[in-house]
Length: 279
Image (tube, rainbow, N blue to C red; front, side):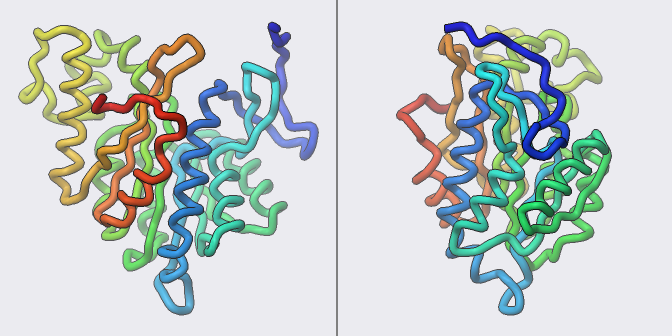
């Protein structure tokens, strides 16, 4: 059955703007929800007044609700998924920090969080700028979870990850778009283009004369090595999400310096026996 497509600008339930996502977004959200639920016990130890706080951070937050273009259903975005998951778990987040390039998205998300009884600190601007404001606002002694879900690699310079991992207890779930890398590898690999900011120094470490598949694999392994060089570790459980025609879409990379975080992620990340980066 083919679902007729229509243009939806607002959610009729609240009159606020919506984004647009593909059907595969639900897999990201399910892993995020499961991890937040599983980590509730650890998060509770950091909640005030006992601890320094447990924050949730998104630098590409969107408006909080999105239209699934496959079936025209409006669904919660990752920010609302995270908020609701924490509220239903052993421990809520003590702080929410949401940022988006579009002010309308930031305003809509803030209203949606408020309607659910929460409060968030909102920022507007490119992620490589707003990250500094977020890091200045959080307690460096707290426990923090960042979900980085950019539309493409061009919005994810390594400087963002480098800054965030200067915080001692910063766990991260990072969306790395394989489809974007496949489509734009020739463009992105030119001097001064996206790969130079996504994986600084890659030209000295990756053979550009190998096959496209091997080059992509080498780039990602080099990028993971950059993360390891900061004293933290990407999980070995890196699920590869595929589309309806089995086309590879993206990886979800979990990063933490805490062995418990890795255990929890590896317990929840494989939803249906899918492949991974290392398969």
